[in-house]
View 1: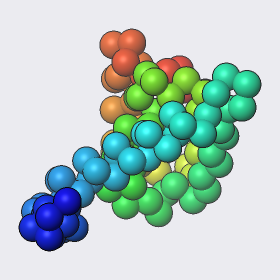
View 2: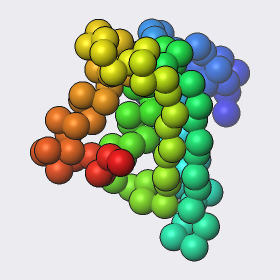
View 3: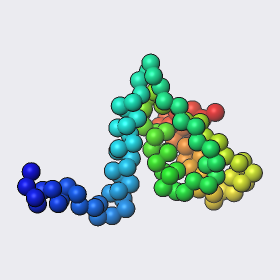
View 4: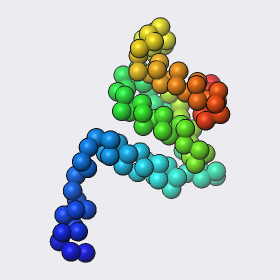
Length: 110
């Protein structure tokens, strides 16, 4: 590898979208590598009412990834802060998940 190639490989991403795509890909690969049907991964996430939009987008990408079958996500949140506010980021994500579930693109919610 030449010094120019090393500089280009270490160059920071040009925009936030590219960084987010890289993070989603890295997390997806990590989940695929560490999980199997015999050794599933259970993530318990608390206080999701405080999660920012980027974190919720990452979480939704995990939920809708059809190749992460050995992943179970348990999310906890304060319903009084989320359920009655249609503009809350978590409420919008949950609405999106319900829409995707109706289309068969998201696993069942419980």
